[in-house]
Image (cartoon, rainbow, N blue to C red; front, side):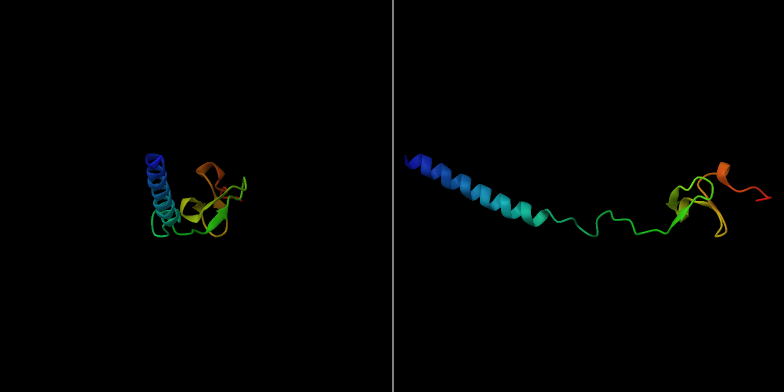
Length: 74
């Protein structure tokens, strides 16, 4: 009977310390792998939203690809 109590105490200690360690590390680290926010623009032809750094065109008309760039008469 004393062995059962001993192993229950060991199990409770392992669970308690595991719970404390797990609770402390469950919060995401704000400095690890977080990309800064980027301005989004909308393609003038299809309406796709994409980051400005990936868009083609200018502030007059943005496009998601070369096929969606407005022509010279547009």
